Image (cartoon, rainbow, N blue to C red; front, side):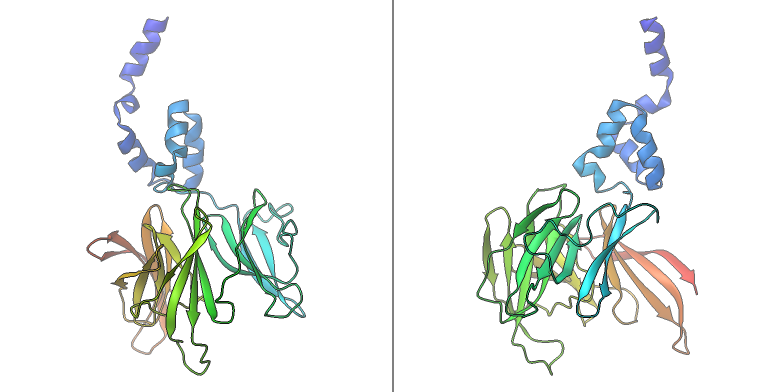
Length: 296
């Protein structure tokens, strides 16, 4: 009987595929199909859930956070993708020691960067990095930049390390100047519990209204020069990556281990006609490839 099973296994073409080839095939399937294939065998389950492979495979989206304006403050909301049932996590983040007047500054791979002003006084500010699913949190130690801090970005890649980074940009606070000149940046590491200070004239202003991406160990963010600036975890400015197209700033995001850029293109009459999505096929040589375009 066992001999017959082994013979059947040898006849199955799937068993001739290498792990790398299986992952490459699965990366081209919808997230729902990938989840179903976890049930094929223990080997495929471990293959799909491996931290390195998860970077290439599509992941399901359980929900997302948004900020809603209240009478006195913006409050976070969590929306289930299914549209049914109660929120999967507490949108008020009431498990934090300070959770009144909470504002979301950024997200990265399931973690939230939050600012809490319990008294409404902007000099009484507390910063937290939160895992809303497990209700774990870390309070960031106070720094000497509270009066100069301009905006912050979050970096976290669970496939590489359990530690996160908080990038704190500080400016000269000249409000009539936009974008504001960036004097430097401090990077907090959860591994060391300390900040490193980077002060470099090459650091490009960071606009917190646009999404940033923590990718390849660096914070990537769009600039006014139609490029993506890179900042490493030591606060050092790295190279910049030009973005395709001729329109204004778009949006960047990471998907399946690659950087993506999306924007709208306009016709000769300056009317938006289609959404274009590019993928950075060759990261080192900065080569983009048009992945999707849709007419309006």
